[in-house]
Image: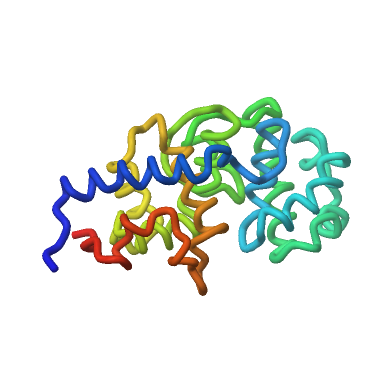
Length: 220
């Protein structure tokens, strides 16, 4: 079977996006938060942890630590104990404390709304910055590439990128900028609910006719 042309892949990507919207009209960030700081903290904590695990921890954490000053002034052992149900909790506690100090020193205790300023904070990479910008501030600067997005981008033949950055660049080229944040949510929801890593439910998949597993050529 010949490889899919760029134009054909673009057309199919549009169909995939429409299919995901129809399947998951309520797709959204599943981390619990009420302000940019809470989302920033929750996203830092989400590394190698599920959203459900993070939400269980932050339910109490957000009652105790309400401002960047609270994290900056936290006693290291106490903060680590507050998040010890999560993997890498000691490293995450250090990141939260240092991030709090940076927010206080550089941004008046507020979460900045630019990619450069966010990625300069402790524990914040491009993925975390994109989550915060897209969901807390409504700014579409990129596509969040987590394990679900990376897996589905390859399975659906939307990207052959080997790194999160390459996958993000490929997905950004296939969807309008205004939809980058929502594209992440849609792919994540599909990855969690239908296209799992080990046992994807291909028989019931809403995107069956658009997937390379059922005969669509792979991305070139």
